[in-house]
Image 1 (cartoon, rainbow, N blue to C red):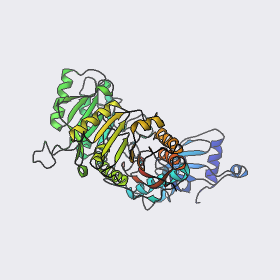
Image 2 (cartoon, rainbow, N blue to C red):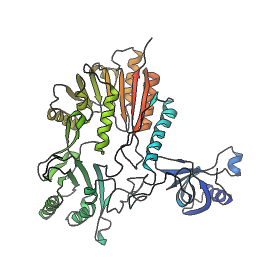
Image 3 (cartoon, rainbow, N blue to C red):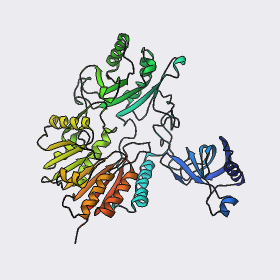
Image 4 (tube, rainbow, N blue to C red):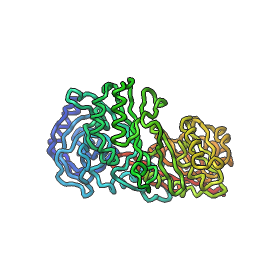
Length: 492
């Protein structure tokens, strides 16, 4: 390893005595060996005499802004006994996959951490994260590695939650944007490269709007939700543009002057204003009073209306690809009954209904269950689907029995994963139950909980991990979306 001269060793030794200084410039170069999920370069110093005597390896340095293979100097910003955190000072030998960040506030805003890494390398890194977690946590590897799925890398985000802070009121403005990295502060951003341009261009205008409201210091959040055009082929500009909803979190009632400002803003910028005076259940349209947000899955002739506060994927184009691959991998036959667990508003359920005999969608939130039922009516699928509310984090073998036998399951859990479901399947396996599905497609937003559940399914429930791969749903971020396919092992 290229690293560790005497200057570095002395600095590390002083820190371990408890002095813990910050902003120490280290001019001795170090070679970066790896990257963590926060896109920090990982380097390791050569062990000093004390560490050698104890059989320990050298101290780990996490360097913000550095990439694997690079030779860098750095500035230490914080220290602990076994590792330090730092920021890159000089890049003496840049990586071949280093990219020029597109965003003016990259490195400050916490929304993206990987813009300095070529997007193809981002995908490779995320695939490696998934494979490593499967190897180390589940102690297994898939029989087939699915080809990574990628899509638009800029202007892809159709949903966002922006914070509003008034700490700059005395300077004549407020800040509206994402939080700075691991900080309570809000980034001073006037544009965002991952938001559609028409929304990015609104950021300065939203600042002016909020500054003009009487409740400027009682509006902490603006949520953005973008729907597809009413008719993308229409010559009418009102019908062929995306529908953009802005949900203002107003902790105090609006004055009549405030209402006039919001209406004028909506008319000028062709946006749909919603208000949220209290909890999420209070989100309601303000102006215009009616409209429709939706996204579409053209391959399955599905149109999905939603409300701004509903959970939907932030990347509509990648969601189309995700749904298409998941249903293809499930290999649904026209005679199959299918379960869709954590079904939300029917993102997978309704496309599945175009292929299967019948689909049961199960969701833990009543609001989403009701919305899914409405979407089934909207798409003319009430005869092929049913929806039910059930706590999917409290599942037993009796619960699964109440769902009835289904040949194929699709699961799309939140970050917590689906451990209780997997444990119940393992128990059914010991009972030699015929309720076990032949194939499961598991869509995951957390490779660690996926790997935990893989271990249960493959070691205790009689399944084989047939294939797995990543979906780059959130380019330039550390978020790893993935998909895994499980098949019942044949009993000889």
